[in-house]
Length: 350
Ligand code: MRU
Figure (cartoon, helix red, strand yellow):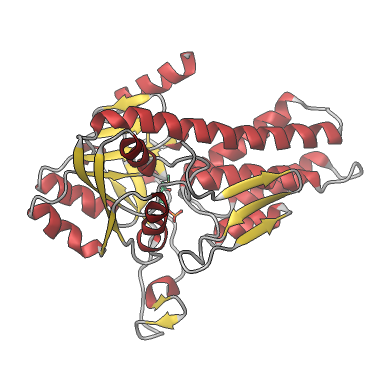
């Protein structure tokens, strides 16, 4: 199952990114040749979504190392390249996971000549990209068991081919259900303030011919009260060891509403989104973004230009609101420290 859209393409000399800032009105691409260009693309949301950010960072490191010369101090230059990428966005742990994979690759080949390290790091970045594709496919397969034959699924933000290298996480399950013959209808929350739901999810699903209805974020409760939502399915940017989930701002409100209306609330994410070093959601760093994201829609102010603004990009949903976490290694139902650790053990031993 190949998605109709593709967020990242890795070439030997560049990373080509679909410019998600311009969607759905313009389909243009940004070519990044250096780690600085990749870092800027991540920061400015040309590429976004936790797994895609991780893959882009790995590619950025490979491209940065590609530009080094034999006379450069490799350990210092490599550390600086990794640090530049680590400084881009703080919440999605896949970014730091991918950087750690690239560091481990260098450690395994310490002392290798520069051309060899350049080749190995590019190969590792490509492996990450291809692994992500396979991980999404398996999340889709596992998640299928939770989707009734006919269902209306509320989702938030964008968790699809635009947020990963494959079919997506939550949207990957929706794709698997659609192509597996289930009758799914997606309610896409617009996801203020950056509108990933309106601009990206609605576009991606339309492209694929998957039925979608766009709603504003504030409509979710009323639709649940009317019995018009069968389940909520979202992605994650970081999952603490106890199962608390950081995801796009607004996710927590949906989880509380879902519980109040007895609607199952599911999270789909790769194991690389689980951060065993973060005990609970309270320790997850939340990114705050520019005030103008809230004051403006596109280039136009929709609020007084000087008004004070709060703009956290993510919130934390406590684990007890989550019915199940769907990963490539299986389903943690419910997600707890024990069920998450068991999934990780199963993945490590397979
Ligand atoms: O700010 P963004 O667009 O990078 O936020 C993305 C999300 O919150 C997604 O839900 C999450 O990264 C999962 S993507 C498979």
